[in-house]
Amino acid sequence: MDHTKVSAPQFDSMTGLDDWRYELGAIHASFRAGSFPDAAKLAAAIADAAEAHQHHPDIDIRYPDRVIVRFITHAVENLTQLDVDLARVVAELAVGAGATSEPTLITTLELAIDAIDIDAIRPFWTAVLGYRQDTYGNLVDPLGRGPALWFQQMDEPRPQRNRIHFDISVPHDVADDRIAAALAAGGTMVSDRHARAFWVLADAEGNEICVCTWQDRS
Image 1 (cartoon, rainbow, N blue to C red):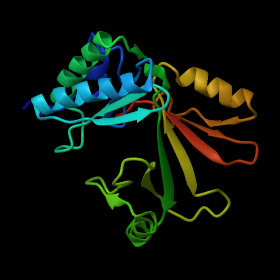
Image 2 (tube, rainbow, N blue to C red):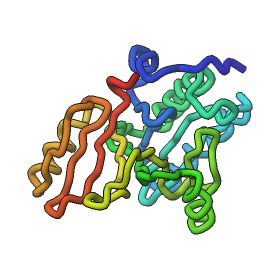
Image 3 (cartoon, rainbow, N blue to C red):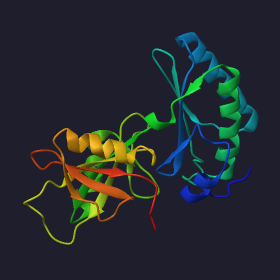
Image 4 (tube, one colour):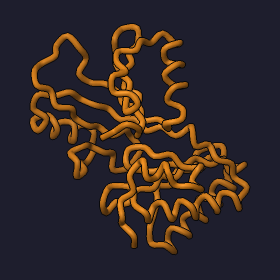
């Protein structure tokens, strides 16, 4: 098995992967199969291909006919060439099934907590959420349903600002439209200093969210 890691820029330069979008070390695709039974058939075909390759994605079937697929190599908790190769197979299966692709709908939500002593609060959040800790110190839902939780180091207390915020990772090619829609809906731009890695937006009462892409990250 080829566990060679694939970075976001490397993935973006590859051809024949238009159905897929890179977010947070994984690639995601969403397909419309036409009916719920057809979605189940497509998911079964993907499962059979995954078993044949001994490499397995996360597959989610949603009413009325949507199949959502996520690839990441769990052994290294990152995207690898193995994921890319099987993603091409999945795309071919989707075409054969007559499914249509919705790559720009894929988003990944995270929650971030700013903390002075991360080690002191991480056990509480692990226990109260029923999550587990990954190799990076983030907390993840063992069922893969809830948003991940990560901790941002603070150097000094910040009582005048909220210390829990959302991170929404979106396809790089829809970030501008998503931000424009949020601003038109009453939001404000707090900072674009780190764009295109992330923009900090806030609602009318100052509650913050970061709109993130894979681009311009060190």
